[in-house]
Length: 297
Image 1 (cartoon, one colour):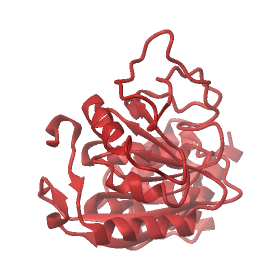
Image 2 (cartoon, helix red, strand yellow):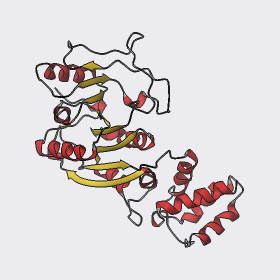
Image 3 (cartoon, one colour):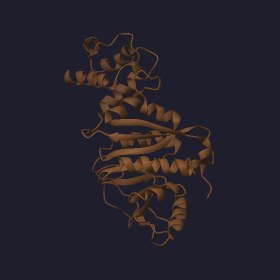
């Protein structure tokens, strides 16, 4: 089975890396549902089935057929379900009215799933499930950031172990004062605990990508509810010019609400230097800035 460039496919073939991912996933998984995005050639899916029942979302119908045929002659201790669907076409809204292709058990007859009026599953309370879940995936580089953000926003996603290109992983896992610290870092820390685990060389894939990959883990905070859109808008403004002063970046945002004088007071209250850059301010202080603005509106 050849990888398709339009789907950003790079098949992970290194058994040592595959086993490492499953080991980390098993440590994170408790009683939650286990979900995967991208079935690939089924190598990771097969290993994940050793620790729990698995639902996998895959956009490529040819890969669905390939893996279903591959698994049809094998026996698993847990249930495997495969959904032929583009996950980014699924609404993220809570209690949204979703229409997805029906699940297919690997033991059933091989066929290609279609999104027709007779092929539906129930509406989801979260993004990919209607119950708490953990996601494990080797994510396509071109959509990795969007997927991770969806997972961070979904209150039913209690954690994930994903592989992305190293540049993306560093941004999500960066701490204050790091040059990689950005809006993505703040959002990730707001939702829970992030940990950069290990790098994966280009030689571990077929076809070989042009960049190094990294595996990182997220564990959602037990008191997490949601990330407000207004907070994200403020972060976008704060990091719009990373090398410029944070005060100057935030000033237009506060002016929208006619609260530019408040920004001076907040910086004084939080002991933030007027010369501070965006990456020098902690996630906690970003929340304090936003909450103080909210209190004055």
